[in-house]
Length: 293
Image (cartoon, rainbow, N blue to C red; front, side, top):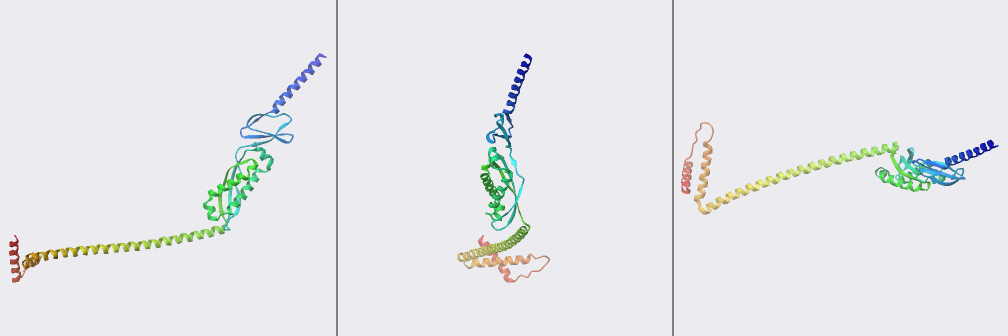
């Protein structure tokens, strides 16, 4: 009997020990840094366990969902949109998000990736429909900012934070692309013609300015020469006024001497016939020179 009692007592002790170990094993939960665990009790939300060591009630609580809180990227999506000027464009989008409140994500939405993709597509179509094609191309940063804000508001009830929402590319259909290329070539041709016309106009203006400058310089030269001749005439007139006829004869005599001197400086052997009046002019000039000296 003692042996049976001893064996029975050891079995109970062993069972109690195993039960305690099992309770510890089931009640202690270690959650990784990149996850959050959703705990349910009898099918209802009990708690959300964060990273580290956590304790739950064995056999009553269970880990219903293990949710990763790492940032996720949806596959690049392509959707059609029509601008306000009725141009069909194909938009490629990319979305990054992470789960911040797993209890909302688990109990409020079934397929979170599909829900986010659908939401982004609708918002992109709506925003592009408010803009013309040129505005879509030139204001892409503003468009991305608006899409990101609206997506963040829409998915807030799902416990999700949208970290990035990008519009990677905006493509046109072939007909629109060909029309825009034709318009671009026409615009380039027009600019080339305008540039050529402006160049010709500038050349004509510069040529006219050059001719005007030359005419002004010639006019200045003539005016200076006229002033010099007038000054010389005035000097001679003043000399005649002061010295009378003698000064005039002196000037005439000097001119005659200069003319004869120029004739005598010719090249080669030559004979110069000097009239008697010229000899008299020489004499008069020398007399006047002596008189002035």
